Amino acid sequence: MDQTREKPSAAQRAVLRPLPAFIFSSRWLQLPLYLGLIVAQCVYVFLFLKELVHLVSHAADFTEQQIMLVVLGLIDVVMISNLLVMVIVGGYETFVSRLNLQGHPDQPEWLGHVNAGILKVKLAMAIIGISSVHLLRTFIEAGNVGKGTSTYTETGIILQTVIHSVFILSAIGIAYVDRMSQTNDH
Image 1 (spheres, rainbow, N blue to C red):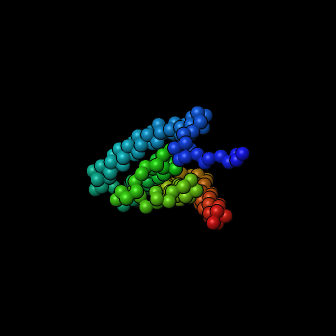
Image 2: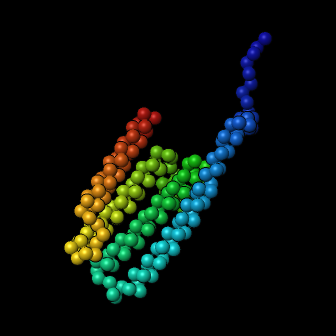
């Protein structure tokens, strides 16, 4: 008597038992979180437009340094918005469901090969970029310490620099670990 088992068909394998199906479907609980991040992105668009109108309407009254600080603020908003897009699109694609954008002319290049490791490295690099803009703003505004118009202390500037350096070291560590895991996989 031959007791070999027939392999289940693709349709049979696609049907999960109730508990695994419930656990697998729990990924959809993240959907409200991504929708909330889209609302946050709308807030950043409003903030960007508000600051842009402020810059244009007061450009004649601003000094070059004030214009540079406002522009750095605009760049900061754009970089945070880019970070939101990476988290929303990459996170949804990685952890919730496929977006099925293959062949779409607007599909971001990085989305075709996104995974949790690549997403972490991209997020770390975006955070370093945002931190760099904040640090540059701090250094520019630090020149006003003697004039009494800066809110930064020497200790605060040093701490921001240390935190930025920790971000850089963390990103290097994340990239190294990701590269090691890719090397071990191949």
